[in-house]
Picture 1 (spheres, rainbow, N blue to C red):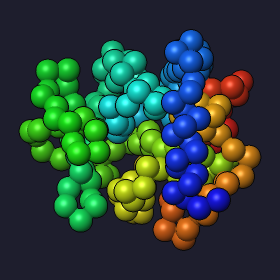
Picture 2: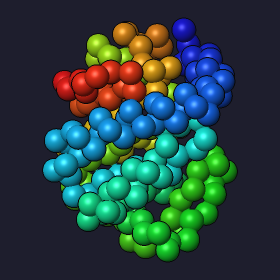
Picture 3: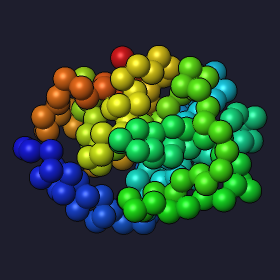
Picture 4: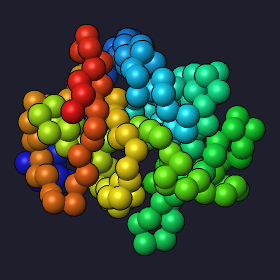
Length: 188
């Protein structure tokens, strides 16, 4: 299936999830993530502020703060680039044309300082840890030379045995995939 058609299909599937199912799966993912050595050893964690159809990141942000970790969130830049900025509860955010909340002020954190990036997307393959995002290419560009851990959290509706979309040479594979319905996490 073409990427555009797959994205549309996934957006439809995710928008049909019930609040109860979404809550149950978010809880399962939080339990897996917080128990993982990857989370426990990371000191600087990058993640987005999730939209309604994505895995909820607010509880992850709050747990990171409670654990004394630094949270950094992305800001889009010209030429489909992005950088991550420190995020505190008092920081002012602005909604972009993509509908994403981004930091307004601050200085970007150097890529090599980020221990873990929770990579967002619409679909993930269990076999190769390939992902399909929202179509901007921002993450693939950023992750191309990133050396820390790349992990994602996936609702059951986001996990596929094999990629059902084309995986291109510039698509960056993930290190770890946690799926809500899985008992244990899967490491590459």
